[in-house]
Image (tube, rainbow, N blue to C red):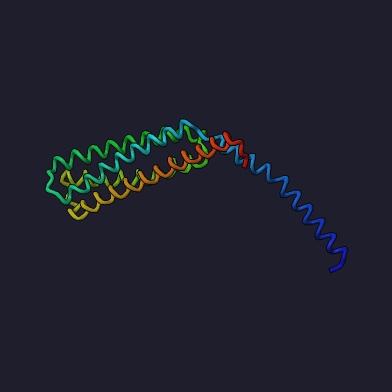
Length: 186
């Protein structure tokens, strides 16, 4: 390679490196701004939603266990009505979260948007259980057992997912508080 080629490559690399270095503060500032958008109100609602989902999970798992025991139809009806009410309450909570979505940090928006598919499935299986209990024989006993299992599975997965998001938010907040306390800038 000629000396002139090396000089040209060196100039390109230096210019590229300087350009890259000037972009780094911009990227960090955008990342810091995204962190600043985190809403305490959304975090609080997500935490409440997680708690509601854990209660739903407990009730769905308990009802699923009814199929292995000699439990009356009245107990089944009471349990599914409780589950239905909890799903409706969760849907109301999601509406509150969606109303605050513009204030939410990106990770909070992801959490909010991931809830609906679970609720849709839970609502569908809950409706099928109610139909069977009301005498709709198009749903067989095998189907009924499958619906109970599906409700328990979806409720368990929803509670775990929300628990993970809340844990993520708490860990992120702890990291940021410690970074500020220790005067660490990343």
